[in-house]
Image (tube, rainbow, N blue to C red; front, side):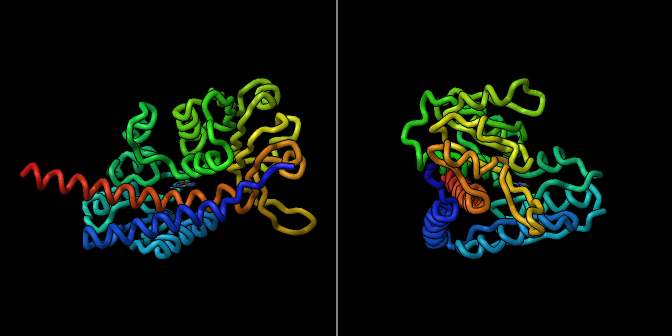
Length: 295
Ligand code: GUN
């Protein structure tokens, strides 16, 4: 039987630490860190995510500003909003909820965000810094996965980690973080031959495919650590349910530790967004102080 990696509990620890950090920040700088969340259109899942992000920001004592744009808004309108948020000293973090409607250029939008305020860690400057092992704002979901992994594994060095999925949001930054932690990393994806044989050699499996219960028990080496990033809504027995990318019921008896869905990676992502916003606010203030000192 695997031990469950409790995302609710671990995320609460992160949230509590961030809340303490926000209090200290406010005392020191006489202002409150601010997060701007931009939602384009009315995708129901995105609406829920954005609402939760704004709610959490309030809980840690940050300001949050929600900007809603219509689904048919132009690239220029969105770019203009981002330019205003970049220039606004009350805003430390900017998050544009993805996916965007098809007519908008996602890469252009991400590149328009100031790298200092890029709390998603999606800007090419932050992606490059992460790849080079330099300080960067790191994407929230992989950051949350690393915190969970460290809770159940003291020494990641030399472990074989298999990341399933190669998205910019999860798969690629996850691989970079695991490499930084001295894992041997294999990234597998939809075109990989014999995924099952590769996965079944892994000490650590991170599943980020976006397909319900795709990772079967035969993919899991006994004793492996399994991190399930998937959140998929399915119908079962006439009921709507959330399941991960891993066939939890059958994988759980084999794994040494596993994240549940819901209550695993999901809450960690939002907690890490709060952590990144505080990190960004501190870096902005440190830069301001350095500029003042330099005259
Ligand atoms: N859509 C799904 N995950 C994410 C995320 O981490 N950040 C943003 N901005 N959009 C997302």
